[in-house]
Image (cartoon, rainbow, N blue to C red; front, top):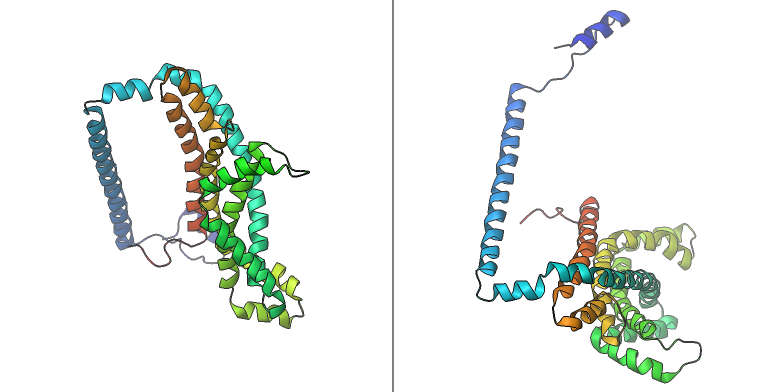
Length: 299
Protein backbone atom coordinates (compact mmCIF):
# COMPACT_ATOMS: atom_id res chain seq x y z
CA UNK A 1 0.00 0.00 0.00
CA UNK A 2 1.38 3.37 -1.01
CA UNK A 3 1.87 5.91 1.77
CA UNK A 4 1.18 9.65 1.65
CA UNK A 5 4.66 10.35 0.32
CA UNK A 6 4.20 7.80 -2.51
CA UNK A 7 0.87 9.24 -3.49
CA UNK A 8 2.29 12.76 -3.45
CA UNK A 9 5.21 11.67 -5.63
CA UNK A 10 2.82 10.02 -8.07
CA UNK A 11 0.71 13.15 -8.28
CA UNK A 12 3.70 15.45 -8.82
CA UNK A 13 5.41 13.29 -11.44
CA UNK A 14 2.24 12.07 -13.07
CA UNK A 15 3.69 8.54 -13.16
CA UNK A 16 2.48 5.60 -11.06
CA UNK A 17 4.98 4.57 -8.37
CA UNK A 18 5.50 1.20 -6.73
CA UNK A 19 3.86 0.86 -3.32
CA UNK A 20 6.14 1.14 -0.32
CA UNK A 21 7.26 -2.22 1.01
CA UNK A 22 5.72 -3.38 4.23
CA UNK A 23 6.45 -6.66 5.99
CA UNK A 24 3.78 -9.27 5.71
CA UNK A 25 1.92 -10.61 8.69
CA UNK A 26 4.06 -13.77 8.60
CA UNK A 27 7.27 -11.72 8.59
CA UNK A 28 6.03 -9.58 11.49
CA UNK A 29 5.23 -12.72 13.41
CA UNK A 30 8.73 -14.07 12.72
CA UNK A 31 10.34 -10.82 13.89
CA UNK A 32 8.28 -10.84 17.07
CA UNK A 33 9.27 -14.46 17.70
CA UNK A 34 12.99 -13.61 17.26
CA UNK A 35 12.66 -10.66 19.67
CA UNK A 36 11.02 -12.92 22.26
CA UNK A 37 13.76 -15.52 21.83
CA UNK A 38 16.48 -12.88 22.19
CA UNK A 39 14.87 -11.40 25.31
CA UNK A 40 14.40 -14.87 26.78
CA UNK A 41 18.06 -15.78 26.10
CA UNK A 42 19.26 -12.54 27.71
CA UNK A 43 17.15 -13.13 30.81
CA UNK A 44 18.35 -16.74 31.14
CA UNK A 45 21.99 -15.66 30.71
CA UNK A 46 21.57 -12.90 33.30
CA UNK A 47 19.90 -15.25 35.78
CA UNK A 48 22.46 -18.04 35.38
CA UNK A 49 25.37 -15.56 35.67
CA UNK A 50 23.84 -14.01 38.80
CA UNK A 51 23.36 -17.43 40.40
CA UNK A 52 26.91 -18.54 39.54
CA UNK A 53 28.50 -15.35 40.85
CA UNK A 54 26.28 -15.45 43.93
CA UNK A 55 27.33 -19.01 44.75
CA UNK A 56 31.00 -18.18 44.20
CA UNK A 57 30.73 -15.06 46.36
CA UNK A 58 28.89 -16.96 49.09
CA UNK A 59 31.58 -19.70 49.07
CA UNK A 60 34.32 -17.10 49.53
CA UNK A 61 32.56 -14.93 52.11
CA UNK A 62 31.41 -17.90 54.22
CA UNK A 63 34.89 -19.45 54.36
CA UNK A 64 36.48 -19.56 57.85
CA UNK A 65 39.39 -17.33 56.92
CA UNK A 66 37.46 -14.70 55.00
CA UNK A 67 37.80 -11.98 57.66
CA UNK A 68 41.58 -12.37 57.74
CA UNK A 69 41.78 -12.45 53.93
CA UNK A 70 39.58 -9.35 53.71
CA UNK A 71 41.78 -7.52 56.16
CA UNK A 72 45.03 -8.60 54.46
CA UNK A 73 44.09 -8.35 50.75
CA UNK A 74 41.17 -5.93 50.55
CA UNK A 75 42.08 -3.04 52.83
CA UNK A 76 40.60 0.06 51.22
CA UNK A 77 42.88 2.53 53.02
CA UNK A 78 45.95 0.54 52.02
CA UNK A 79 44.72 0.38 48.43
CA UNK A 80 44.31 4.15 48.30
CA UNK A 81 47.75 4.74 49.82
CA UNK A 82 49.56 2.35 47.47
CA UNK A 83 47.68 3.28 44.30
CA UNK A 84 49.95 6.18 43.16
CA UNK A 85 53.15 4.09 43.48
CA UNK A 86 51.63 1.08 41.71
CA UNK A 87 50.19 3.28 38.97
CA UNK A 88 53.58 4.91 38.43
CA UNK A 89 55.12 1.44 38.09
CA UNK A 90 52.42 0.45 35.63
CA UNK A 91 53.40 3.34 33.38
CA UNK A 92 56.85 1.73 33.13
CA UNK A 93 55.19 -1.58 32.16
CA UNK A 94 53.26 0.17 29.40
CA UNK A 95 56.39 1.82 28.00
CA UNK A 96 58.26 -1.49 28.11
CA UNK A 97 55.40 -3.21 26.28
CA UNK A 98 55.22 -0.60 23.52
CA UNK A 99 58.97 -0.47 22.86
CA UNK A 100 59.35 -4.25 22.99
CA UNK A 101 56.34 -4.76 20.72
CA UNK A 102 57.90 -2.67 17.95
CA UNK A 103 61.25 -4.45 18.25
CA UNK A 104 59.57 -7.86 18.36
CA UNK A 105 57.61 -7.16 15.19
CA UNK A 106 60.71 -6.08 13.27
CA UNK A 107 62.92 -8.93 14.49
CA UNK A 108 60.31 -11.66 14.14
CA UNK A 109 59.34 -10.57 10.64
CA UNK A 110 63.00 -10.69 9.60
CA UNK A 111 63.38 -14.19 11.05
CA UNK A 112 60.18 -15.38 9.38
CA UNK A 113 61.38 -14.12 5.99
CA UNK A 114 64.75 -15.81 6.56
CA UNK A 115 62.98 -19.10 7.27
CA UNK A 116 60.81 -18.90 4.16
CA UNK A 117 63.51 -17.97 1.64
CA UNK A 118 63.91 -20.75 -0.91
CA UNK A 119 67.00 -21.99 -2.74
CA UNK A 120 70.23 -23.69 -1.62
CA UNK A 121 72.07 -20.35 -1.44
CA UNK A 122 69.75 -19.22 1.33
CA UNK A 123 70.30 -22.34 3.44
CA UNK A 124 72.51 -20.52 6.01
CA UNK A 125 69.71 -17.98 6.56
CA UNK A 126 67.13 -20.72 7.05
CA UNK A 127 69.48 -22.56 9.42
CA UNK A 128 70.16 -19.40 11.42
CA UNK A 129 66.46 -18.62 11.69
CA UNK A 130 65.62 -22.17 12.74
CA UNK A 131 68.34 -22.23 15.42
CA UNK A 132 67.18 -18.86 16.75
CA UNK A 133 63.57 -20.02 17.05
CA UNK A 134 64.52 -23.37 18.59
CA UNK A 135 66.83 -21.84 21.20
CA UNK A 136 64.78 -18.88 22.39
CA UNK A 137 61.46 -20.70 22.17
CA UNK A 138 62.91 -23.55 24.21
CA UNK A 139 64.23 -21.35 27.03
CA UNK A 140 61.70 -20.35 29.71
CA UNK A 141 61.24 -16.59 29.78
CA UNK A 142 62.00 -16.36 33.49
CA UNK A 143 65.29 -18.24 33.01
CA UNK A 144 66.22 -15.98 30.10
CA UNK A 145 65.52 -12.95 32.28
CA UNK A 146 67.88 -14.25 34.95
CA UNK A 147 70.59 -15.14 32.41
CA UNK A 148 70.55 -11.80 30.60
CA UNK A 149 69.60 -9.65 33.58
CA UNK A 150 72.55 -10.79 35.68
CA UNK A 151 74.95 -12.01 32.98
CA UNK A 152 74.49 -9.22 30.44
CA UNK A 153 75.85 -6.37 32.62
CA UNK A 154 78.75 -8.57 33.63
CA UNK A 155 79.89 -8.74 29.98
CA UNK A 156 80.49 -4.97 30.06
CA UNK A 157 79.96 -4.72 26.31
CA UNK A 158 80.95 -1.40 24.75
CA UNK A 159 77.99 0.68 23.65
CA UNK A 160 75.40 -1.28 25.60
CA UNK A 161 73.90 -0.08 28.88
CA UNK A 162 74.29 -2.12 32.05
CA UNK A 163 70.85 -1.37 33.46
CA UNK A 164 68.58 -4.24 34.43
CA UNK A 165 65.74 -2.59 32.53
CA UNK A 166 67.66 -2.80 29.23
CA UNK A 167 68.58 -6.46 29.66
CA UNK A 168 65.09 -7.31 30.86
CA UNK A 169 63.65 -5.78 27.69
CA UNK A 170 66.25 -7.69 25.65
CA UNK A 171 65.08 -10.95 27.19
CA UNK A 172 61.45 -10.14 26.39
CA UNK A 173 62.33 -9.28 22.79
CA UNK A 174 64.42 -12.40 22.22
CA UNK A 175 61.86 -14.74 23.73
CA UNK A 176 58.74 -13.26 22.14
CA UNK A 177 60.30 -12.75 18.72
CA UNK A 178 60.86 -16.52 18.49
CA UNK A 179 57.13 -17.15 18.99
CA UNK A 180 55.95 -14.27 16.81
CA UNK A 181 58.32 -15.32 14.01
CA UNK A 182 56.47 -18.62 13.78
CA UNK A 183 53.17 -16.75 13.58
CA UNK A 184 54.52 -14.67 10.70
CA UNK A 185 55.94 -17.75 8.99
CA UNK A 186 52.56 -19.47 9.19
CA UNK A 187 50.93 -16.43 7.62
CA UNK A 188 53.50 -16.21 4.82
CA UNK A 189 53.24 -19.90 3.97
CA UNK A 190 49.43 -19.73 4.04
CA UNK A 191 49.41 -17.50 0.95
CA UNK A 192 48.46 -19.64 -2.02
CA UNK A 193 51.34 -20.32 -4.47
CA UNK A 194 49.22 -18.97 -7.31
CA UNK A 195 49.51 -15.50 -5.75
CA UNK A 196 53.30 -15.69 -5.87
CA UNK A 197 53.26 -17.03 -9.42
CA UNK A 198 50.89 -14.28 -10.53
CA UNK A 199 53.23 -11.68 -9.07
CA UNK A 200 56.25 -13.17 -10.80
CA UNK A 201 54.26 -13.36 -14.05
CA UNK A 202 53.70 -9.62 -13.77
CA UNK A 203 57.45 -9.12 -13.67
CA UNK A 204 57.84 -8.50 -9.94
CA UNK A 205 61.14 -9.41 -8.37
CA UNK A 206 61.29 -11.66 -5.30
CA UNK A 207 61.51 -8.67 -2.96
CA UNK A 208 58.67 -6.84 -4.73
CA UNK A 209 56.56 -9.99 -4.73
CA UNK A 210 57.17 -10.46 -1.02
CA UNK A 211 56.46 -6.82 -0.17
CA UNK A 212 53.48 -6.17 -2.45
CA UNK A 213 51.76 -9.56 -2.72
CA UNK A 214 52.69 -11.96 0.07
CA UNK A 215 53.17 -9.84 3.18
CA UNK A 216 49.93 -7.80 2.88
CA UNK A 217 47.89 -11.02 2.74
CA UNK A 218 49.94 -12.70 5.47
CA UNK A 219 49.66 -9.65 7.74
CA UNK A 220 45.87 -9.65 7.52
CA UNK A 221 45.69 -13.33 8.43
CA UNK A 222 48.03 -13.23 11.41
CA UNK A 223 46.87 -9.97 12.98
CA UNK A 224 44.45 -11.59 15.50
CA UNK A 225 47.08 -14.00 16.91
CA UNK A 226 49.57 -11.12 16.96
CA UNK A 227 47.19 -9.11 19.10
CA UNK A 228 46.90 -12.08 21.45
CA UNK A 229 50.70 -12.11 21.73
CA UNK A 230 50.57 -8.38 22.50
CA UNK A 231 48.16 -9.04 25.37
CA UNK A 232 50.48 -11.75 26.68
CA UNK A 233 53.47 -9.41 26.37
CA UNK A 234 51.62 -6.79 28.38
CA UNK A 235 51.25 -9.25 31.26
CA UNK A 236 54.75 -10.71 31.02
CA UNK A 237 56.29 -7.24 31.11
CA UNK A 238 55.78 -7.52 34.86
CA UNK A 239 58.39 -10.29 35.00
CA UNK A 240 61.17 -7.71 34.78
CA UNK A 241 60.43 -7.10 38.46
CA UNK A 242 62.63 -10.14 39.24
CA UNK A 243 65.62 -8.03 38.15
CA UNK A 244 64.80 -5.28 40.63
CA UNK A 245 63.19 -2.93 38.14
CA UNK A 246 60.50 -0.89 39.90
CA UNK A 247 57.47 -1.64 37.78
CA UNK A 248 53.90 -2.15 39.02
CA UNK A 249 54.66 -5.50 40.66
CA UNK A 250 57.88 -4.34 42.27
CA UNK A 251 56.15 -1.19 43.51
CA UNK A 252 53.42 -3.37 45.02
CA UNK A 253 56.08 -5.52 46.65
CA UNK A 254 57.72 -2.45 48.19
CA UNK A 255 54.39 -1.17 49.50
CA UNK A 256 53.57 -4.62 50.89
CA UNK A 257 56.88 -4.86 52.73
CA UNK A 258 55.99 -1.83 54.85
CA UNK A 259 53.30 -3.61 56.89
CA UNK A 260 52.89 -7.03 55.24
CA UNK A 261 49.47 -6.09 53.92
CA UNK A 262 49.04 -7.64 50.45
CA UNK A 263 46.42 -5.21 49.16
CA UNK A 264 48.93 -3.52 46.76
CA UNK A 265 49.20 -6.81 44.87
CA UNK A 266 45.42 -6.74 44.36
CA UNK A 267 45.70 -3.15 43.16
CA UNK A 268 48.42 -4.14 40.66
CA UNK A 269 46.34 -7.07 39.43
CA UNK A 270 43.30 -4.82 39.01
CA UNK A 271 45.31 -2.33 36.95
CA UNK A 272 46.73 -5.08 34.73
CA UNK A 273 43.21 -6.41 34.14
CA UNK A 274 42.03 -2.91 33.23
CA UNK A 275 44.65 -2.94 30.47
CA UNK A 276 44.24 -6.53 29.36
CA UNK A 277 40.46 -6.78 29.04
CA UNK A 278 40.05 -3.92 26.51
CA UNK A 279 42.90 -5.37 24.44
CA UNK A 280 41.34 -8.84 24.56
CA UNK A 281 37.93 -7.50 23.54
CA UNK A 282 39.54 -5.54 20.70
CA UNK A 283 41.19 -8.77 19.55
CA UNK A 284 37.86 -10.62 19.58
CA UNK A 285 36.15 -7.76 17.77
CA UNK A 286 38.78 -7.72 15.05
CA UNK A 287 38.67 -11.51 14.70
CA UNK A 288 34.90 -11.43 14.24
CA UNK A 289 35.21 -8.57 11.76
CA UNK A 290 37.71 -10.55 9.72
CA UNK A 291 35.53 -13.67 9.81
CA UNK A 292 37.85 -15.72 11.98
CA UNK A 293 34.91 -16.74 14.21
CA UNK A 294 31.78 -18.38 12.96
CA UNK A 295 33.06 -19.57 9.60
CA UNK A 296 32.88 -23.16 10.80
CA UNK A 297 29.67 -22.71 12.73
CA UNK A 298 29.07 -22.60 16.45
CA UNK A 299 29.56 -25.73 18.53
